[in-house]
Length: 112
Length: 116
Image (cartoon, rainbow over all chains, first blue to last red; front, side):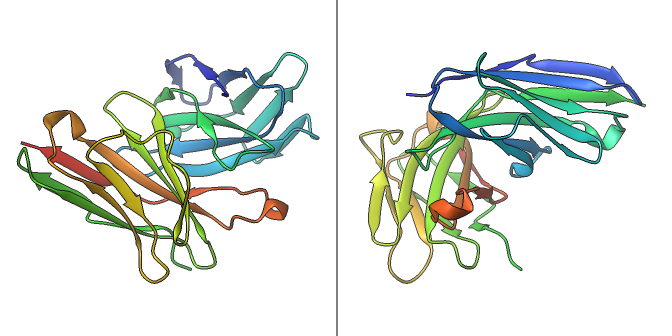
């Protein structure tokens, strides 16, 4: 089955800095890669996703890049704000499966 | 536009009791997923259901755990004879189940089970 590795497990940045979270996947058939943000005591919320026919996608301060050859994808957050502090999860799903496999999460802390 | 609704949000059970967690998917969604999250850990897949049908339960413990999604009403995750190790957050997610839409899944706010 699919295996998703996520790094780093904890990321601490100053407000205004950029943050990058990286994930690798094992199944070359994976074609859908969502990212979720989970605030304390809440459920994961989808923030951005990318499909394998696209190399990069951007939504305001958030961008995701995908390198299919290397089987890795990354989340980029620019101009970080304290409210960006949360746990971020990447996931990968193959075309033949409805079930995404999640990374272990990255705890992002943005210091004011 | 209601999202995925889970209840109860918090549940306390004594060892040996039963826990029932309910999930109503988003309007128009016919597929439900259950995930478990232990403290400081990621989301572990448990079971994937359509109405009246379990599609994949490969992540579900073989004993004490069961799930259903009846024709009418919410999906239910049932844990019998709970033990302290069952203490976790249980998240339900739903999707339209249509390949054309990409099957993006949306999570509920979770049910936090504490076994004392």
